Length: 166
Image (cartoon, rainbow, N blue to C red; front, side, top):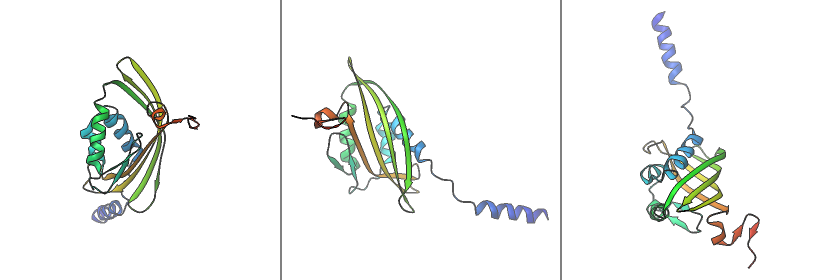
């Protein structure tokens, strides 16, 4: 009887669904620890390395492949940020296929460069693909980062209500 119970317990545990991925936790680790601490080594662990992937930043262009995106990030991180903090809200993730998910979120940022402090709001969307070889079991295959007000927006001609009249 004891062997039967052990066998049933083992079979039951092997038929349990796999643990769901904590996409909100992954997004927070990427933003708060990777981008927040300007840790390119950590950031890089999240992204697919396929050169056909596209990653968009608030300055407009889509970067083809992570290495090009990394080059842009190195430039941004080297601009003399002395302190920054992020507050993440409304992190939502939706399945868009058996191995793909999309996460959306709002990030409120405070960035200090020298004596200047800038506060801005961003929207970040990430498309994840399951990959057992990726450090977190998921990898980002597409990113879109947009700013409607703050640090980058005025350079692009937008305020929080749309295009700035010229």
